[in-house]
Image 1 (cartoon, rainbow, N blue to C red):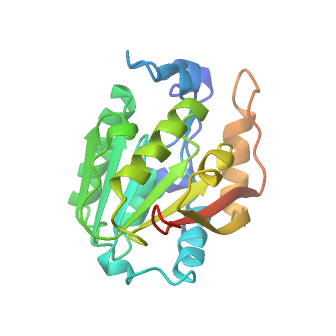
Image 2 (tube, rainbow, N blue to C red; image 1 turned 90 degrees about the vertical axis):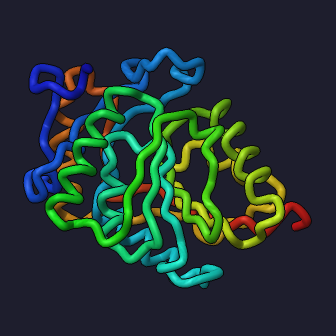
Image 3 (cartoon, rainbow, N blue to C red; image 1 turned 180 degrees about the vertical axis):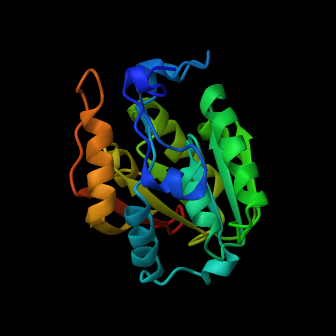
Length: 241
């Protein structure tokens, strides 16, 4: 897969070196083929910066969720190679789930998760499913969904409608973290969703340098990186709101 070899720009992130996993690389959306009708709406694969992830989780915890973190299931929508799942499992979530459509990314993610479990890094149970996020079956109890801009507007619209249907009678039991919010307007027009935060979340100096190296090494030069990510936090208040 282009973007996962040295010849096509693969550059290892320090997170992978530290923990012995493989979550690095940048794969353009046009290379994320799975045979599914939603393939053409895939954006790209790129692992979230750990510093951005943890800063966003802290900001979410200040929004007064319906329950403590220990009661929430964390769900990575478009999990890729699983970096967000690995990071989330170091926190005391009730469990960590993920869903990924691309078979190559899914295979790599499962190897990462197995290594993570064996190395004793996970504090929470982890489970990764193959499939379309627009049909993911959400578990009972409070859920925290995480998206790192995984797909374009047509799939995002289906996904948001699926959220509303899945949590129709479960007000405040869904919160959503959105990194690189290109389809923010799709959530904004969904009745029952309330935005709690909108703005930049800073990368650490180490993550900024690492991500800029990854971008610089891309042969096509089509992506850039800043020292922050545009992020938002949402809460489902119910169809009547």
